[in-house]
Image (cartoon, rainbow, N blue to C red; front, side):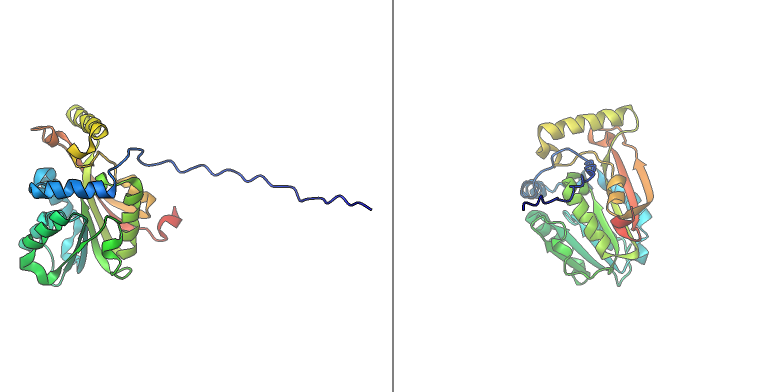
Length: 260
């Protein structure tokens, strides 16, 4: 006797809508970025000295650094930002600073610049992987996680990895404080951003791999709640000066990315 085996019906799974990328532009590879910033470092150029000072001043103002006992800076560059914090006594005497960078040249310059504060400074050289320099730090052990003019040169994947590591490290009341170049809000800044984007597409190295970026969507995607978001208008005295800059301060959201 023959039996016909009845197979259970195959249930069609509802296709998941793929996540839309926050940025489809192709960033420099980690190794290429290291080469570019080794070259920039040898010429004493970094974002802080080139165009960042007014923006980082606002970031300092919004960061409430007097409350920080443990601070991490991702992408310390030449050490100019950290030096300003120490030189102006903006940090408590007990605050410990950990700086992370992938450029050997920048790391050497930062070590020399921050030598007077060596008892409070730890510099970590990485291969570019976002979490490499801070794996040794415990969960919820950091009060401030700062990154100035760095996220705008990373791939979307690496930006989210940086933010994931920041969320791991920050205490519940800790602050993520970031800044970078952003899109325009008036004629001159819109033209400057469009020109910058064009140069980025043509030759990323000319602009250090950086491109205009909106930071808040990345932070929200990574499980942060934006507390402050400020746009600093360009001063229009030069092409770079016409660029708008953005400062965003955020706190870890309870539940992280799963709470979206």
